[in-house]
Amino acid sequence: MNRTLARTIRTLSIALVLLSMVLPLIAAGAAESEVQPSSPGITDADYPQTFTDDMGSEVVLERKPETVLSLSLFSDEVLMELLPAESFAAVSTMAVNPIYSNVAEEAGKISPVIDFNVEQIIQLYPDLVIAANWSDAGKIDQLRQAGIVVYLIDTPFDIAGIKQAVTLLGELTGSVKAAEALNTAIDQRLSSLQAIVQQIPENEKKTALDYNSWGTANGADTTWNLVLTLAGIENAAAEMEVDDFGQVPLSKEVLLELNPDVLFLPSYIWGEEDASDAFYRQVMQDSALSGVEAIMENQVYIFPERLKNSYSQYLIDAAAAAAEMVYPDLFD
Image: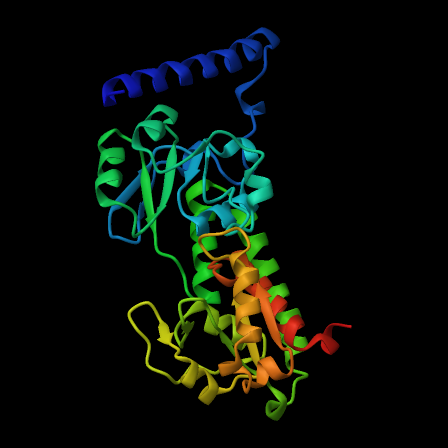
């Protein structure tokens, strides 16, 4: 579908919708003043609005978006809290994947489910597309050339960044009050977790590694390091040199040297369906690792992938889950 045709279809659709809304009002003699805005505090007078996305591009919204498409798992998880299901033009395949998504159940009730397919998106013609800042630049350019408004969002790496992005998404979608409520919930959840974690004496804090099947762990300046910190757990790899992706290579010799109190293993490994269980057995039965404290004390846990890799408000849930695994007595 070319740009002109897409715009024509969209214009006709909007005209039909508006006509179906106006005729009953005329028949009933309804006054214009009685028509309420679709979202409290959001009126036509607030538009157009201009934003600058996280890649520096100007984004203009002529009116409050009625249909939104999220192509970032971070924005998927936030927007599912801010918007009703009917506001989504579609959902991404990642959003409905229970391995990685914390909103898979809610997203699964929405259709269609799409990949980042330019033709599909142009056919849907949402009022606003939100995509990760690392998205395929060529596809983003095609969408913009078709007249679709695209906002590229940077994935946050700390609580302040998450809250800031929540506020931004609330402003973009005209759901400011819902964003404020979510940020309040984030603060409350974090405060509750901190009250529990503060009970742990400094000299009794456990050390941990997230050991994976290809022999690396997350170092400092990663969201996993933040998860452990919030959980009152020390990252045994925090002082080690990391690669460009924040990973620390871990030979078995290094793992023995670091000797963590706790090991967190992946809940999903690409390949066979039971690969993560097989890796757990491999680690527990490996004679070369038998001297590791975590293995000797049976403090080895399979950690949900959807929580471990979260960049959204669910990062706090990840920290709470880790804390409960390592310090179960605090949660009795």
